[in-house]
Image 1 (cartoon, rainbow, N blue to C red):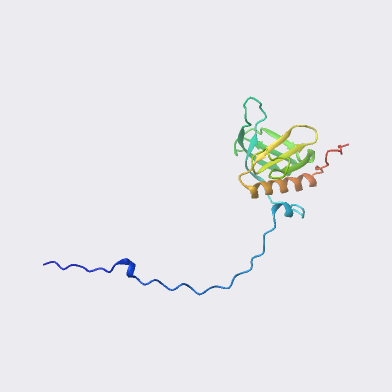
Image 2 (cartoon, rainbow, N blue to C red):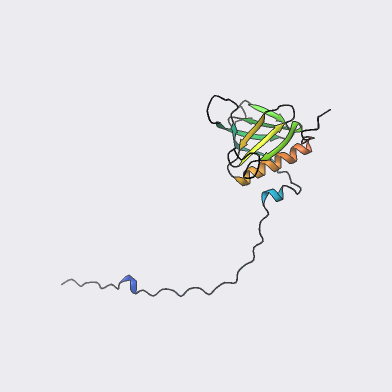
Length: 166
């Protein structure tokens, strides 16, 4: 006759005692991106990556966005973007860093609440139109905004609305 295996019910298993309470670690609060923009910004080596660019066409009811590979050419002092990352891709447009009047981020409580979250708005000194890019998240938008502001200021841009280049 086959022997039956006896098994204990799983609910009768003894549980491990809870671990003793650990002393709480004090963690310093990270500064907000808005507060960090006031301090000096250390430029990163290469500023490049994919952002969504707002189309300027007014054909659709709602604005449309296309993915563009954006980069800053520090030698020429330009912000460039193209459809692909390939070196053979034609540069769709470029903006001189010295002609950037302001770089602003969207968000609650700003003048750009109507734009998607994580938007970067670039105003050009000679062109009344604005360039609107959308980053993947808040940190990336802050990084692009602070880096572009610092590089434009270093190139002689960020003059403000009332100042004109002579």
